Length: 315
Length: 241
Image (cartoon, rainbow over all chains, first blue to last red; front, side, top):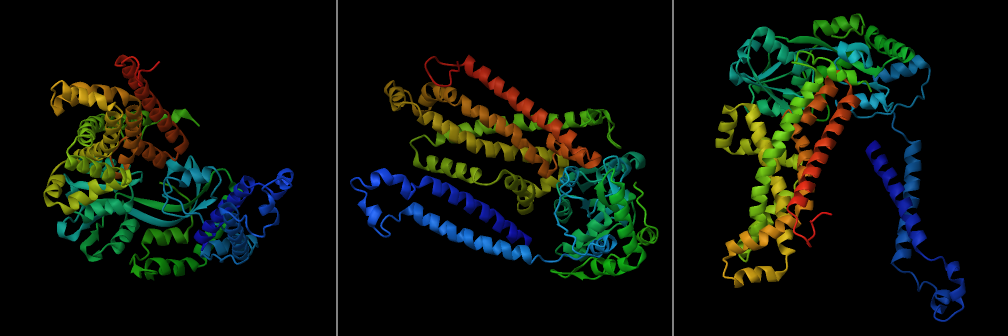
């Protein structure tokens, strides 16, 4: 819906500019006043539609399109679809502003910080790890998920523990917190692995699916997501060990205590009221439309603990 | 902006961030240099093939240029890195046996080399065809074979004429190495992103990358301009000022 609105806006602007250009290109009827009484101008003076050439026809078409896009935009502006989410509703109730407009902006892991720093987004809800290093740049809301950094392997590989990955090729996604963790694991456990980086989780997983890497080291919930989306989910398993436990939190700009207090109250409220149980069940233990994929990821004790005592401690 | 970040240590890494970026720059330059050599050799061969009087050679060269010029570079990287080993079993066996870094380097050089070769072939063809028809005829009239005509008459002039567009190709190639991040080669852009993700200091990281890329592209530009002046033939374009 919002996609088509955007397309419409772009079309609207392009058509408007087109009309401006075309109108400026054409001679106004009045501009020919002097020659109008001279020789050879009688056709355009007295002819009805004789002078309808390419330019004026295009102008007419564009004017019609402009007319239609104006109507459509006016329609969409008044019939905005309501977004609903437990947290967003809670914020509206908290602020006593039921009409509060919420604009959803998709982000990637590389543009989320710049977009937050330049004020395009106020709150980022995603798989962002709350780390002490990052807290120097941004603030975090209450922890809403706790993951373990671990590895996904093919069942056929016969690998049962992280230690067995010694000497193997391991894929991981560049820029994630798993990269330094893997390096640290190598140093402290005295194992040697060959790292290969995917630019996103799908590519890192593809390397394992393709037998190019023995394991994919990443957050367990993201591994579960990749496995659930794969062709044969039963071919893979997630190792029970953990390199580190990491909290996911909403990210918001630093040095805005009022906004942070609001986020803490709203998100904490959803957790305390038990609303979170319903939201969790909907997304992690039932099938998710449109493909009907079920992540089968029941609440772990650390997650339960985070919901019971909302906190924003980083790792 | 706080440049002191470059002196901070990489978490669990070896050394400060500036050294991390320097290590990335090293890979960028290695890939660019190897790919340029590959592109220059292959591009020259194909460019020459497209100007010979053998119809099948011309068609083969045209086909190559169209194929590689019409596919986005990042798609080509994906194809070489994921699809080729996936469909050709011997390649897959080799890929699994070697260090991933080796394969990333080979993929980057092959991919960038073939891509840039297509563009160079177009420049070389244009350079040869811009020469007066009489030059070729003069070569044949002197009793030179086609190979000798190219070697002693056409190519020496053609290469001089196309030095300016070659300069842009070299600069493009250096900048295109950034796409190799998509297959996980730890070149400059990869390191820049990594630094941004880990420290969340995107402005500093990308600021540094911008300056470094601009500097090496500018340096290669000056180098080619120097070459252009050194080999100039008076009275021809490409002679500089």
